[in-house]
Image 1 (spheres, helix red, strand yellow):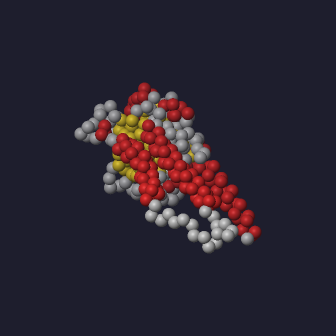
Image 2: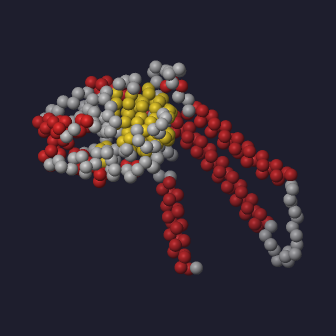
Image 3: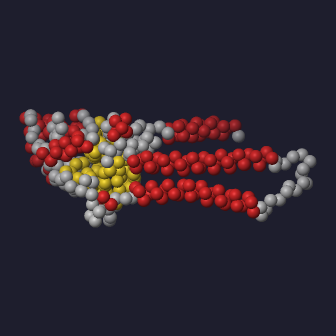
Length: 353
């Protein structure tokens, strides 16, 4: 028995660590730090259901302990038959009615929130609100495309949205099933190839400031070798700044300012990168992200810190960063001079000063 003691202690320690770590999280990624109307609703339901479960556990535990102590076998009572309570209508009514009441308490706000969060009438053709912002989200292996159909702008990997207003999403997939999820703000919802799912989110300005102006989004459906690396970033902006960003995207023109960047642009065209990547905000490509504002992004490939060295590593060997991605084995023959030029060009693709 003693040989098992270290294992029991280790298991208990890991269990305690898992419990503590489950409550840890940054404001840009934690569901326990809601950052919008949808997240607040979901968090409130989670707190309510947890509270009900804790109350039930406490009550049952108290009754259990009381029964063990009160009705334990005592010396001299071996042949005594305790009072039978089988068929006690009062007890049966109590343990039938109480669960029903708890279920009603949980069901009413859950059903109410479900219908509220499912209301996408402002984006439907019959009840369309002209002021509603609609974003078409397309999930790909292993990147995200965001199209603003009413504004004529397409971008990839970084979703830019206005704060303190509802943003409506059309979700679909180009290949396999994915799932769109921004933990701090709400979700998640599947992206399918055969149908379009719709929902809305709201990005709170105060929570955005607390999170440093950036939220993380993830794919929440196992979709392949690089599922864990299928991230995207969300940049919420005040409405005026968002409108300026849209205008900058519409008027963005890729004009390299240095000889090295111009060499990179030529290389970008010669290597047929332009066949997969668009550098105009109004164009879409089915195989790779739009790069119009690549130089303004905060991450490379959704997971690497944005800097020159990481970009070169990504161009040099995409497979080592994101296994099974569609760009693998494309740039393996580039010389260091060509990598310098291509990196210079890509990092110059900016719409903001």
